[in-house]
Length: 159
Image 1: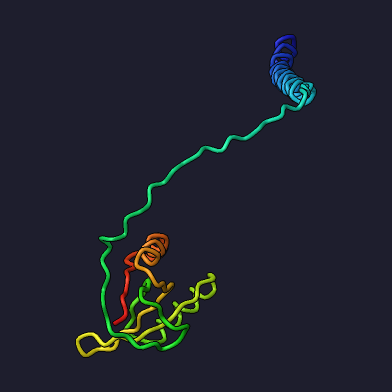
Image 2: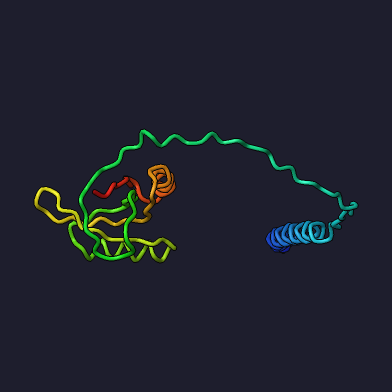
């Protein structure tokens, strides 16, 4: 009978150790959360400092557009404002509706686009012109700005 009582005590003692470990873990976790949640936040106020921005003076040399390649074509206006001597072509299409679609996109971006028709080797090509200028330098400057959006933009001189 004594052996049976010892066996019962031995079996029940394991459960108490397990629950004691669990209680200790939960208590430590709760303490850790309390430390994180109760950490005071301090702010330091300083007097405002007056800042005077400096503007660097940059001098940009005048760009030389004398060597920019210009194509000369005999074109006829399909739609848009009249052309000036030099124009920036951003797209060429064999289908007129494709040229009109790009023209609409340009108009939505604030440009005054034009669509012109050129006959090249007996085939009709519709050129989409984003900008048109009286001087080559102005057109070349505009082309440089447009090349980031329209790779392959080129200058057209109307015959």
